[in-house]
Amino acid sequence: MTEKFPTHNKELIGWVKKMAGLCGPDNIVWIDGSAEQKMLLEQEAEASGEIIRLNEKKLPRCFLHRTAIDDVARTEHLTFICTRRKRFAGPTNNWMPPRRAYEKAAGIFRGSMAGRTMYVIPFSMGPVGSPFSKIGVELTDSRYVVLNMLIMTRAGEAVLRQLEKGDDFTRCLHSKAGLNISKRLILHFPEDNTIWSVGSGYGGNVLLGKKCLSLRIASYIAKNEGWLAEHMLIMGIEDPHGHVEYIATAFPSACGKANLAMLLPPEGLKRKGYRIWTVGDDIAWMRIDSDGSLWAVNPESGFFGVAPGTNSHTNPNMVETIKHDTIFTNVLLKPDKTVWWEGSDGEVPPEGIDWRGRSWKPGLLDADGKPVLGAHPNSRFTAPIANCPTVSFRMEQHHGVPISAVIFGGRRQHLAPLVYESFSWEHGVFVGATMASERTAAQSGKVGEVRRDPMAMLPFCGYNMADYFRHWLSLGRRMTKPPKIFHVNWFKMDNQGKLLWPGFRENLRVLEWALERCDSKVGALKSAIGFIPRPEDLDLNGLKLSEGALEKLLEVRSKDWVEELKGIKIFFQSFKKDLPAEMWREYYALAERLRSRG
Ligand code: OXD
Ligand code: MN
Image 1: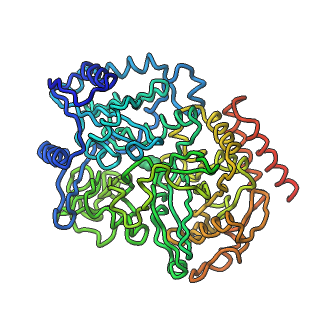
Image 2: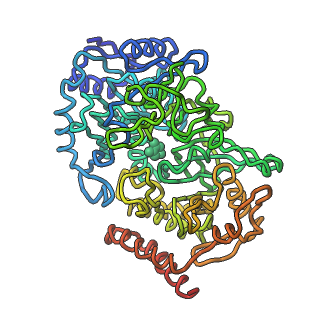
């Protein structure tokens, strides 16, 4: 085994040696971030069959990867927060005591890299050297992981140099270990700044800088250091005077965050002079800066987006972004070595190789008579943010961007209006804490069932969510210029189950109202749940809504909200006495407002 270490950081050397001793690789390769090393890895991964090189003319420097068929999404039931005390992980997380977790996983890691190479990936979440960035080092036996991490993070030599300055780092260990679901574990040890992931090759489980570090571990660090690590997109909205305001927005997974982050303004607003600047599509790290307001950075440098449904109507900027230097996972391979997925541009191909690697034709049915999909519904692309036509010029700025509005959202067929504004920061935290979505046919579980997903962080908060709400409240008290907090719902339906709002680029009309509220430039109606735009407060120029749709979109039905309170109560009770008193205060205040308005 190679025993050369390109670093003087003793902690790092000691840990790499120890983990190599456990996993038993034949070889250790340090990732330096160079183009030469990347090309070599691509060639090796191609030769081993891990990736397929795509049509060099039509998709330059792009590749396709297929995961194991039972390894296609995050496995929340195998994801654990391992803290000394169970209370610390809280009622919404799976918990395992650290000793047991280390022992159990070590049994799987032991010798798992025999005959293979261990790659050492030093990576920075956020610009290298920024006081707001965090460093991680991921050890992995997967070239696919290395190639993805090179897109999703700033990885290589510059990070090692940063570590020479004695910076701390998150210890991230990953092994495919046979990709066996019965030996799959995604373990987080916030008290040790450590992540162990074994038995999976799916992005969300193995690109450890993403959900594991930037949300679960970072949320814990953020609580201790006084900032926020959130599951939010960050976008800049340039108004007709050239003034850019930034928003941070949380939606549950697969609710269109990436589409919103880079939307193309609708014709009416484009003519007015609106433009969008994309800072991030998934994660926001937010701090109170010296001006007393909230500033956000996107710690990632790539998109790991859902392919199905991505097309020139839903997201033209993403279509541009993934035309080169992109890794596709679990999509359909066409005979000309380009790719396709359900809901992509162009004709349905007459034939291809599906995400499982089998030959495919449109109309193919499985043994149960169900259509066989060409691409997996959670098939993905990994692409550099720098490819995006709307990438913000402030991406690399160490302090990030100032946030004018925080926007929460959910998928509610009948309850929540198109948009409402909270009365205060505290009320806004209640709005975020009670966020929920109804299950669609695309998810497992009962269709229409309400799933609470506070701040879209349910699967990603690395500690007790009651303490997380408390932390949000305390931040509000520290800010002199807090952002306003809004809630949006693009998914309201009429009685026939038809969407009332066209969504996609038209959503900018709602964001325009929200930002104008931040600058006190537009009116609103005070309702029991918050401030709602009056029909005349929204610019609907050039948009045709069906008869009565707008009234329905802005309607607040007390009866439905009284029913909603019952679900909120059950959810709040699950935190027992840990729930901050302010959350109950907001709950009873809402109940009282609903009662007095009938
Ligand atoms: C994601 C998710 O992949 O939220 O971003 O699941
Ligand atoms: Mn996400």
